Image (spheres, rainbow, N blue to C red):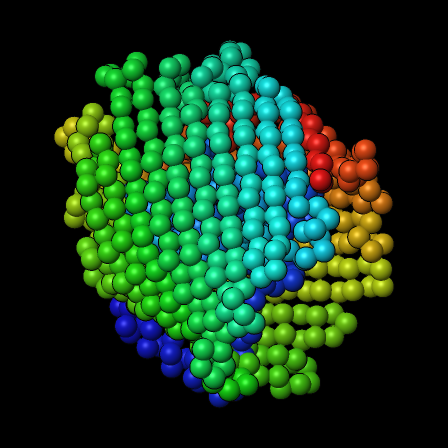
Length: 628
C-alpha cells in the first residue's frame, strides 16, 4: 500500500476511534513499569549489572544482540536499521554500519529507553527495527552536588583489563556543569578453541581508548533553558579478525566528536512549548593492515552530519495534545572506499494524542497518531504513519492492553549504493528503499501485595518487510552485492516477569523471547528458511538480593540454536552462561565508597556468538568507587 493511502487509512481510524473515547498520555513520558515493547533502564540497573557502557546495559535485555563492534540488532533486523539517539541527537550516519554503543560510557547516563518495532513515524528513516534513546544526566539536586561533586572509579580484571574514570558535577546558581573522563586499557589476548578443536591464543586484541564528556546547562529564567554538550572518543585497537583468518598486525583507529546545543522555552504561546536543537557529528575510522590476505589494506572513512530540529508541544484541550515540528539533516561521507557522497533530508512531523477517562471497568482509554514526512535529496519522499492504542483498568490488579500499527521505510546506505568494485564486493546504485509493516499487541500486569510486588508483560509482534536489501554473492565474478530480491516475515512473543519481595530485599526477573524470522523471498533454496543468527529461543533469569549496604546478583542466560547460512544447513549450537556480582558500600577515610567483584561466564563455557569469532572464557573484575 502506498504511503499516502496508508496514512489516510490510519487518519480515518484515529478519528473513528476518538469518537468512542481513545486517549494517549504524552508519548515522551518515561514509563515506570517494565514493558517488552518499551523497556527503560536506569541507574539501579546499571549498578546491578555493573555496566561499563551502554552496550553492557543493552545486553541485559532479552532479544537484544550487541556484537563485538558494539552495534545493536533487534529481533530480525541488522544494526544499520536501529536508530540510536542521545540527548535528542541522532548518532546514525549513512555509511552503512550501526552505532557503536559500547563507546558510550555509562557514567554519564541517566536512562536508556529501548523502543522495539517500526518507529519511522517518530524518528525517520532507518528506524525499521527500533530506537534506542539515551539520556545523559541532568541537573542534580543542589545539596547532593555540594556534598559529592566528584566520583572516582577504578577497575582491574582478567587479561589486564584496566578502567579509570573521574566524573565531576556542580551547580552554581542557574548554571550546572558535568565533566567526565574515562581511560580504558586491555591486553585482550586470551585462550580459545579454533574451528578444529585446537586450543590457541588470541593475539592483536589489545584496546586503548580515551573518552571525554562535557555538559553545561543554563536556566535563563523560570521558563527558558539553554544546554550544550560535547563528547570525544578516541581509540587505537588491535583488529584480530576471524579465527580462521587472523590479522596479527591489523590496527583500527577511531576519532569521534559530537556537539549538541538545545534551547527550551515553556509557554511560547498559550500552552505550547518550544524545543529547538542543533548538532554536529564528525566520526572518523581508519583501518590499516600491511599484511592483508591479498594486498595491504589502508582505509579511511570520514562521516559528517549537521542538523537542526524545531518542535512545539502543547494542549488544544484537556483531552487533546499536539506535537509538531521540522527537522533538517545534511549527511556527508569522504571515504577511500566509497568516495565523496552527500544527502540532505527535510522532514515534517506531527503527533496527535487524545485522552479519555470514562470510568468503570476502563480507567483510561487512549490513542495516538504519529505522522512523519521525509524528503531525502536522493530518493522519493515518503510518509510514515504509526497508530497506538492503549486501554487500562486500574484496580488492585492493574492491567494495560496496548497495540501498535506502523509503517516504516529505510533508504539504502552509501555503502549499499556506492561501494567500489574490489576483489570481494561492489555496490548497487539502482537499489530501492525497503519498507516494513509492524504490528505489536501487548498486555501488562501490576499486582502490589503489601511488601511484595509483581509485574508481568507479554507482547506479540509481527514485522513484514518488502524490497529487503540483501547482500549476496552473484554475477560472473561471484562478488558480494546488494539487491532488492527478498522479503521477510518475522513474528514472535516477548515475555517479562518481575517479583519483588520484602520491599525489594529480594527481586527476580525473567525474560523470554520466542521468535521465527523467515525469508519469504523467491529463492527456493531460502524460502521459509530462518534468517541467519536469529535464535528461536532466548531466556534470561536474574536474582538480586539487597541487604543494607550489601548487594548480590546472579544472571543466567540461554541462547538457542542459530543458523549461519541462508539455506539453514549450518548452525551454531545453543549455549548458556552465568554471570554474578557482589558489591558492598562502606566508609573509607570519611569518604563514601563502594567495592564490587564481578565474574563473567562463571562456568567457563566454550561458545561462539558469531561463527568464526572467539569469546573469552571465565573473567573476573574488581571495581572501587570513591565519592569525594
